[in-house]
Amino acid sequence: MKRFSELTEEQIVALAISLEEEDARFYRDYARALEEHYPASAEVLREMAKEEDHHRQWLIDLHRKKFGEHIPLIRRQDVHGFVQHKPVWLMKAVGPERVRKQVEEMEYETRRFYEQAMSRATDAGIRKLLGDLAQAEQSHEVLAEKLEAKIVDASAEAAEKETRRRLFVLQIVQPGLAGLMDGSVSTLAPIFAAAFATHDTWATFLVGLAASIGAGISMGFAEALSDDGSLTGRGHPWLRGLVTGAMTAIGGLGHTLPFLIGNFWTAFVVACVIVVVELWAIAWVRARYMDTRFLQAVFEVVLGGTIVFATGVLIGSA
Image (cartoon, rainbow, N blue to C red; front, side, top):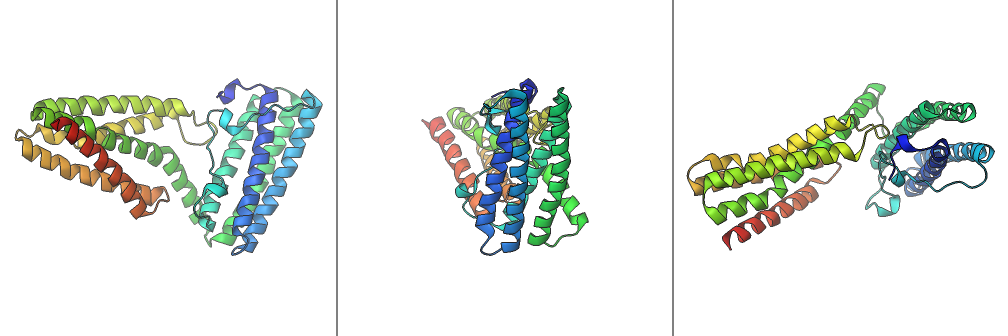
């Protein structure tokens, strides 16, 4: 994968062509999925797909004029910073609310892409077209608002609140949840293995402290380096890294601190209670912010945590 800042002008135009084509196909797939029960919204989606077709043709004409007939195959998955959108055929259920959210994300991402691309272009013709497309995307957002109006009845204030909530989820909740899950689950095995291997609360505390802080540092750097946020709107990478790292460390320290208690079995029971609270909290956050059914979230998180916990106890008791 390449960073967006490393792309040439030809590669930027080729990527824009690929994005417009992919977005148009997404919209047509959404329209087909909704047309039976939401025909008006399906028609708006087909209109949006036609707009994307026009944009793609403008870009192809520009590429032909500036760089020739051959268009390099450059896709969003080849460039750092893009969100990977799940196609309709991989979704278990396609409802109007889910489509609306995904369309909003795609429109937001496309608008940011053209703004960033225009700032990097030096050729006057390329810069003009990218600027025109950025303006066209603003008018395209009106179509997205029409889609929202047909699917949900919400005021402008409610729409702004939803946008702020989505940014909060992208920039804070998602990295924080990833860290909390990793810290709460991945540290269970080493902490409880050390506990049952030594029956020494201080030694177990030191193992848990090292595992939690180490995991926090590792996850923080991994998140910060994964995406610079310039296209996805996920915020400053080091802020996301800090959130992820801190929540990873907190997730591990939660069931580490009880081992400061001198009595082994008291410390063990308290740690187990905290583990249960952590796993249920993670399930609640996933259900609240990540559009996951609560029972499904409980099953996935609690089952995974229980398996890791049992693994640590069995290894420590061996």
